[in-house]
Length: 314
Figure 1: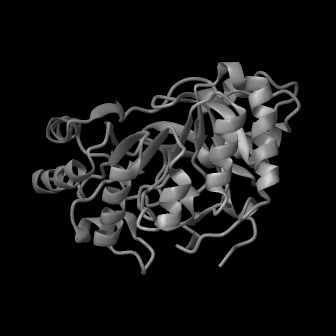
Figure 2: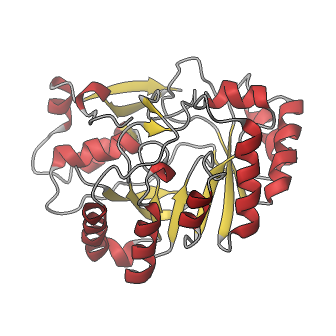
């Protein structure tokens, strides 16, 4: 299975080559809103999950084909990418061997760790998640590893914001009934002020979440959040655009790669399938590899997790 995929259309990063240095779903959180489902490997211990040479080779192949049409190399993963001990080596390779800016999308929960901060220093952009302003909201929203605490996580973000010379961005994921009240928003604003991100993106669940009860706040609440937090609303809408197909890649593997990390709207799936010589999607559903799930009136293709789980690391 390839560790690099895309380019994928993104409102934040344009056309991005995604890089996943971790197996699904290794993460320090098990967020209620996560599009990848519940965390199956809840951990904070870092590891080298795959040979770094394989990851770099996958990046090289995609850059050679798509490089001139790529805005970012984005290290995002199938969980929390900073769990990979190789993330610093991957960033260094991309900076030395390509001219494409490097972004890391992280929940920020491990920034209290000096090695993690050091590994991210060469990135052009680091986007962290800061969606809670107090311990109770943090616990309800993220369901973190038992050895993580809110104050330490926030302290790590503050230290990193002072050390990092690239652009620090922040995403606030809003979930109705958890962090969308007036008091919760002002509390989150107070924490955001401590790290002074260059950009703030306000996001709401637009893909099927880990928990069926998760819903986005009402539109007027989201607008109120933008006023309080000073953030952009561009992340609150379902993404649009096509997902590229690299010639020579296995079609089944390509679809599994993409919908594992970016649950795909039906139109996107069918548009992609139209570029294949064979019609693979319905056959993949029959084989139990993927399934359709409707969320907020939009039909998405998602993987059947038991079919793509890889070996767990403890």
